[in-house]
Length: 161
Image (cartoon, rainbow, N blue to C red; front, side, top):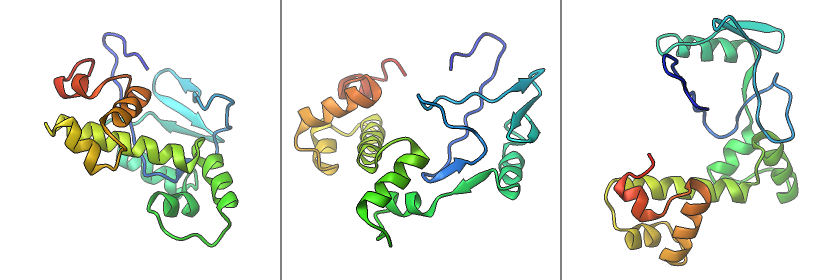
C-alpha cells in the first residue's frame, strides 16, 4: 500500500499456515479491516488498537488468545515438506483455502524469495540458480520476473527496492 507523507506503515509477517479466522474471504484475496479514527480497527466482533512497533507483540498475542489468529497444521506441515495424514488432493484444497494459493505456487514463491536474498548478498546469478535447483539461469530469471518484476541483475544492483 502506498504511504503518504506523515503516515507510517507496520507490516506483520506470519509463518505459512497462520491465518485470521474472522476476516471474510474476498474474491481477489485483498482484505481491508474497518478502521476508526486511525486508532482502532474491527476484526470480527473485536475492536483492537492499531498496533505500533512497541505494541505489535501484545497485539499478536491478543489475537492468538482470542482465537482470531490461528495456525493450520496442514499448511505448516506442507511448507516444511512433512508427511500428511491426508490425500494429496485434500492437502491441496486445504492449502489453497487457507493461503489462497497452491502448494506448488507457494514453493515457487519461497524459492524466488531465497534467490532474492542470495543475490542481494552478492552471490552470482548462475551460482544461485544452481544452488536453488533451477533448471538454468534463464529459468530463475523468468521466475524472479514473475514474482518480483525484476531481473537478477536489477536485484543485485538494488534497482527499484
